[in-house]
Image (tube, rainbow, N blue to C red):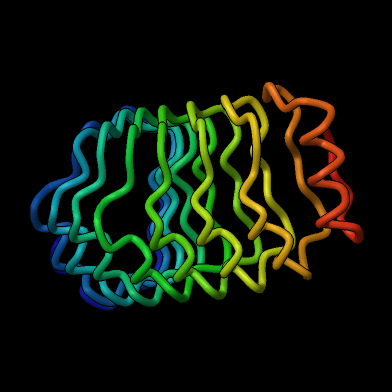
Length: 197
């Protein structure tokens, strides 16, 4: 497989792969890689060699963590890591600043790094069904964001900086222990957003 040096798209989803051969990571012209619904764990550091990737689908695997080398994929615009076992994101995650679509739902995330605010091209962020208790104030720096799903976490409040998201049109907060007082506060700082409690 390492001889397929002109390959730009590769999908081997819905199998039972736990790993890929080491030669696979020499396919440096790949732009789209879909590996969802496998049994991959861990994701090797060699993922950082595929620096032409714009789309990466890794949902429904067994990932406990991400190698820090993933932040070398600076051309990524789409990243789906949903339905894994992630508890955190690697240092420098904000360097993926071309991302416009990020799915992290159904993991075990307890915290988001502050540098998530550096993802200033992000329009879609799906974080439902995690263990988040707070959202960093830097979320307010995502000035292109129009969809934010935070359902089924442990949030009691959102930072006031979320009011800076003037392009946000849909915010989902069902399944969080947010008081009526806090709900009214969120409504007041996001008057043009459809908010679902």
